[in-house]
Image 1: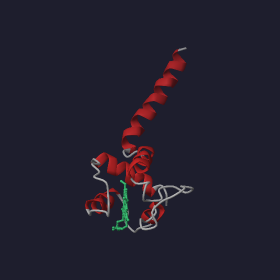
Image 2 (image 1 turned 90 degrees about the horizontal axis):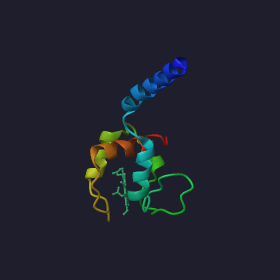
Image 3 (image 1 turned 60 degrees about the horizontal axis):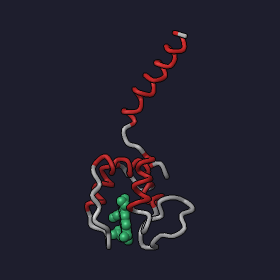
Length: 103
Ligand code: HEC
C-alpha cells in the first residue's frame, strides 16, 4: 500500500513540477482564438468560414520569429473592425503558443 502511495506522490511531483514550467497553455489559447479571432481568421483547419482578408493562423505561425512578444506587438496595431479586446499577457502568451503549435 505504501508503495502505491509513494508511486502516486512521485507521479504528482512530476506533473506538479513540469506543469508550471510549461507556462503558456495552447488549449486555452485555442479557446481564446475561437472566441475572439475565428470570426475573421482561419484559426484551425476545417473551419467553415473566415474573412478572406485576415491571414490564417497557420500563415502567422510561419512568420519568422513568431512568438508571444511579436504577437503582443502585432495586436497593438489596431485591426480593421477589430472588436475591443482586452487580452492580458497570459492570454496573449496562450494564444501565441496555440498559433505556434500550428506550424
Ligand atoms: C473583425 C475581424 C478580425 C478579428 C476579430 C481579428 N482579426 Fe486579426 N486581422 C484581421 C484582418 C482583416 C487582418 C489583415 C489586415 C491587417 O493586417 O491589418 C488581420 C491581421 C492580423 C494579424 C497580422 C498583422 C500583421 O501586421 O501581420 C495578426 C497577428 C492578427 N490579425 C491576430 C489576431 C488575433 C490574435 C485575433 C484574436 C484575438 C484577431 N486577429 C482577431 C481581422 C480580424
